[in-house]
Image (cartoon, rainbow, N blue to C red; front, side):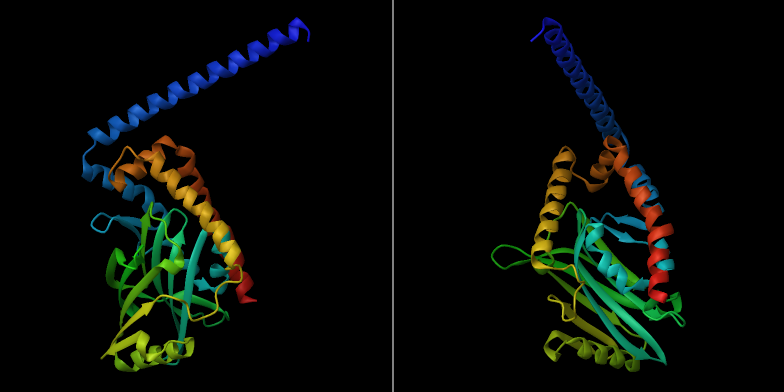
Length: 312
């Protein structure tokens, strides 16, 4: 080998080495600034900042339950629901069980759907209340405020030894009750969702129960108390999205598990979720920009495209 090539190789190696040292130095300086910000900023101000950031995407943070949840006026409501959304869940980094229950009440077609599973870096669940679009078959709209239902839900995870561990509890009048525990990993079949639905009258309650029966639920899986239905969602009774296959689920869950472990490692210096998320976004501003792009893309492209497809 010519001496010139050796010198060039040494120079390039030295350049790469110093570039690496510069990267580590700048990263450590940024870490130090972030830690000072987290340490010196009051908790109320950090919570306000976090909620201001995530409210753009239709979510808020519940400190008591340590979960994220959807706002009542979230942008997702404008785009309703169609089966296509469930079919796309896997490609968007979610492995979730879906359970739609259809029924007719007051000469209108209703659907209440339950979901639970792994939503990216979160273990979560949600319950949505919809009415069929009057002119678009297969498409459902989130119900208006006067049709909100009382929804309560408790998500539990079966731990080793068979004991259930509560992840969160939520309740209130809503069209879309949600809860997502960031940094928690679960397989859908490890989760059980305890649901309480309060209807305005017994007639609607009976109509929903008829829909439950048609979906495959037996009397031992739900309980009716006047206008209220208590039920347990564990193993789905209805057909799941076409890509929910054994091997594909395992591959996706393995990738999501790695993501959760990376998040935990990346934020290991912080105890509170608020601190972890703010530190994560400040240390990785590209992640925040990525979420912003995904949110805008979903709002302005995908939802419209697939909504049109379902209307055909």
